Length: 157
Image (cartoon, rainbow, N blue to C red):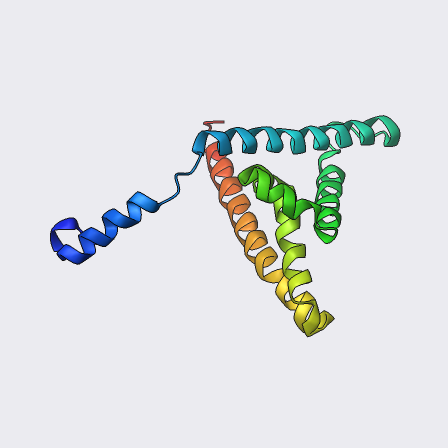
């Protein structure tokens, strides 16, 4: 946005008019909704973890991968039925930040481009988002592992 000193009189009037008619966002209300819906999603994930531990004899150390896979699958399924998008409209970041938001974003791109065919439409567009997430995830894991290794070598850890 331009500095007020560099703006013409008409631009300043327009900016005042815009601020007058701008809808105020309920930030606190949105934060509370995001907190509770995000917490609900995490509670479902914890219940799925307990399910795997109890019925399939996973340990607390090994239950993470099947739980994440199940949560991503459920979010993709709910996205296909249009439920997750309505949840996202209500909860905002509360539904986007957990791993279920990743599943939603991947499958949404696939659904949007399904008319272009399975290979170029679904496959090509589905992994546009997934590719960057995986790339930066792997890179971040590499950097953290490198730092930890150096700290172990130097005797800090």
